Length: 151
Image (cartoon, rainbow, N blue to C red; front, side):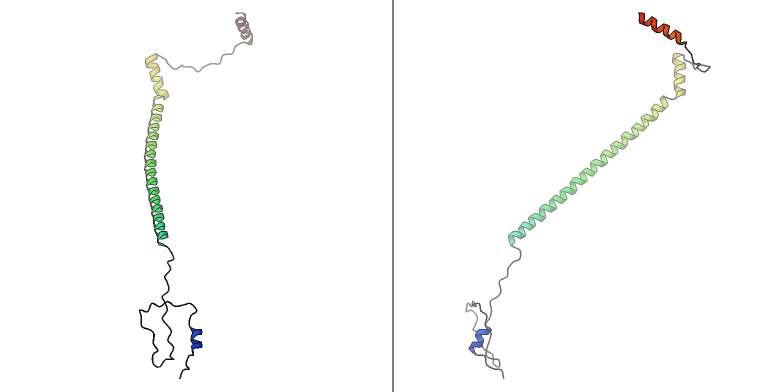
């Protein structure tokens, strides 16, 4: 048989904080065959929220703002990529036009074409003999210089 619990030992076993009991439940009774001591019902622990409602809403607004900024960034990047693509097409078109103009310049400035035009329109012909170097007497150069200085 179990030893009876004295009032002194009951005080040692009960918690030191006061228990709040509203009286809506029947008083605890000892069940037959037990030691006679029934622990009184304890109040439920208060659930403490780790995150307050205000903080939760604030976090949701913050996340929404970050999402909006991210999506607007993606849209801006897409617009820039379209602009870059358009500019690259324009550049390629200009380069091809430039190549066409260079080819036309080469065609128009070819020696055979210029010779034909010169002979037909101006009556110019190529000389039959190669050009000859002319040597000038240095004394003649001095005479011409002196004549020019006198004037």
